[in-house]
Length: 258
Ligand SMILES: Nc1ncnc2c1ncn2[C@@H]1O[C@H](COP(=O)(O)OP(=O)(O)OP(=O)(O)O)[C@@H](O)[C@H]1O
Ligand SMILES: [Mg+2]
Image (cartoon, rainbow, N blue to C red; front, side):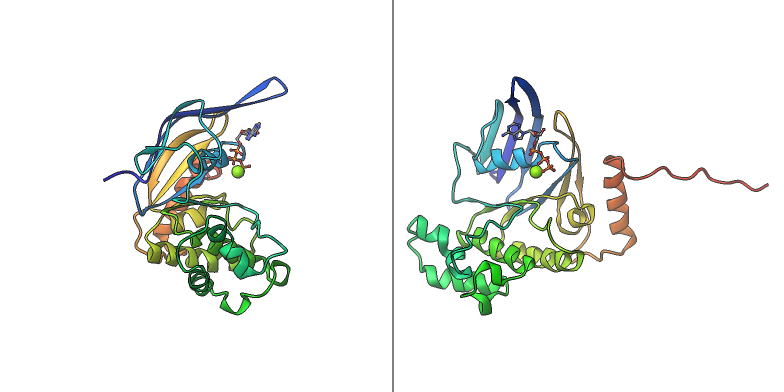
């Protein structure tokens, strides 16, 4: 089986005003087709940089990035990208936004039908002719997800896609993302700062540390779906990830009464 995405010994630095930042170092990662992988780690540890390398929007200094066995030489329709901000064009309606990429690359299929299908998938059919400012933040996030999905990418890269949402909308959209991932059989790679979100959605959680960004743990989440968020097993995984991120807190010393 060809891996959906493979990073081998990848490193990346940036130079600003003569100062060098080693953003990523020694990154080895293989992602199987159809899996859901989350990247979690402190701010500045190189998560967005890693997604940009996979998207072909940036290139490594050393090592190799491959998508479906081929070296990544630039962006491709096989890799959809959803940014943290919804980035919808304010002057286009929701359906025009969703069809934008397909029109731009003169997609041969029936664009109207695909847009209608995507609107249904994210539950926005009633808002096809609305403009982004007429939608709530969560609805804009869903429209943005629909736009990223419209081109049928085999891999979807999500950079903190739900970062700006309230906890309840966030949980609802997490379930929608899980449903879409299962229905469309795609590979999803998501950056998040939310440990519960990572445990809820991922087959594997990749935990990173900062400067230089390195992978410190790969945690397979072996819970059946949909995952009960309040179960002890779920809590066990989140606690383990929080510990790796050094937010687990110190356990109180046991008290002994003789
Ligand atoms: N274009 C750039 N020029 C200079 N430095 C950059 C550039 N892009 C990223 N960096 C640096 O690389 C490091 C990693 O940045 P990156 O955006 O990948 O972090 P991140 O893990 O996504 O952080 P966050 O969780 O805050 O989004 C940071 O120290 C950042 O300052
Ligand atoms: Mg980032």
